[in-house]
Image 1 (tube, one colour):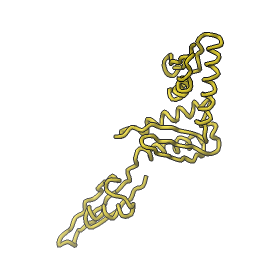
Image 2 (cartoon, one colour):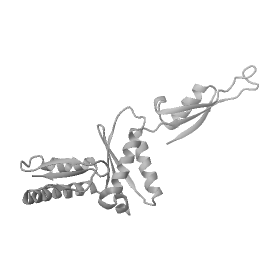
Image 3 (spheres, rainbow, N blue to C red):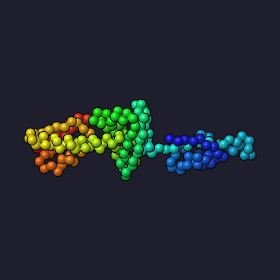
Image 4 (cartoon, rainbow, N blue to C red):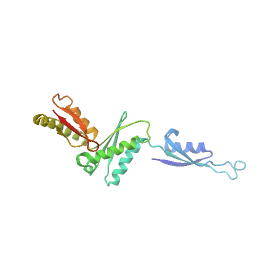
Length: 204
């Protein structure tokens, strides 16, 4: 977030000077008038220049990206963040050393970060964004693992002719299981329990 303090003969002139330095429009900044200035006697004696502080307004996507950088820095993990915006979905790809710490066991740490980023990006926002926080392709690897698990557990349910309960998962991971098995005519899936212990049950 950039800011600049500028002066001018008038408040408007000071604002224009600040905007020129930041290369921004009025809509992209917050303007604080520090001193409105005064012309002085005969326009000379006792005159003072107007002073303003102009601060760049960060949009919520920028705030979310900065939130990730600050959080990982506080965890002593140097992280590069690539931000991809597609309509109302934002993906933050994280890369760097010690990335496994950010992923955590079965992605639990990454899921927690994703949840927090979802809150940050939608706070006081006029538009709702869905968020994916990924770390060096972990989400795709996890998706493949869940798809394989779904088919394996469905076979087990059919073979033993009884219900099979999977481990608790966040909603977006449960959706992967449901999608994989929705065309399997000989098994059904449903979610059971309350968060954070909500899980999928597969039954013949």
